[in-house]
Image (cartoon, rainbow, N blue to C red; front, side, top):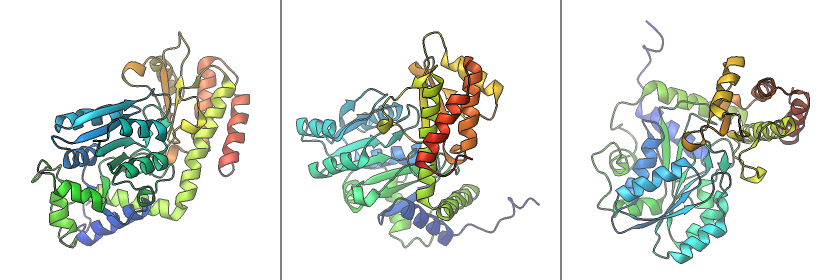
Length: 366
């Protein structure tokens, strides 16, 4: 029999141990609930648990996930104030402060840390301070940022922090997690519209699992996904989180420097300070279709982690995913070499620029 089909049972103690590892990764002492599904599950659960008719939410939109959150919030009956900025930049704490001053009734704020789809990242520490001073709860989508850039859940005052394992963590997509602060639990417990007896119910987990001492799981765990999540957490711990974060920062800096040296494309997010370390998005010039370019790059090297942008960005934006195992010098070199070939340019200067940028941030490019 296959060793993957003849595993010992994944116990409640095993499950709790993985939750504790996630809590350490998030730098939080709050309750952590590992959810058996892709990260959209705890994201929707967090919103439906905290939002309700009569509440007012500030929904910060810096990419497609912010747009999704607005739909869920409205579906909950909340009054929604959208703070939208161009997808090639980041929102500022000043903009958030202005929105909160204009809408003092806001009691919930939703924010994406890093938007892998658009390649931008937001200054969470500064924004969280403004939100906490206002008195609202902050829900953070940290799916793309966790293990790629600093994430200090408690120190920043994030009330609901959602992560997934499939990007910078280099783990599985079928399991995710959310940390829930004491303030968030108070809000959720007092919400008569919060889901109960539902897969979206955080209160069910609190009642049947967290508050019950984490001794009996409320359902059979997704064993292979939990083992994979535990393995990637072990790997991050062994490598050292600072080293993992540095590797992602180096990959982003190297790709951006190399692309600028090529001269045929430009970073979609022009300001380096606003660039997410998990993915570099590139603006293609007029006449160069991003989807066609992505197809040509994959023809040159089927292993390249490239794709065209989604929706309205499909024709004009190329996305280079350099997260998890792809946050490596090999991925950077292969991507820049293929881009040079596909656009009829010389890769030499691009590779030199990438090496210098990598070594300015991380270890040797060798």
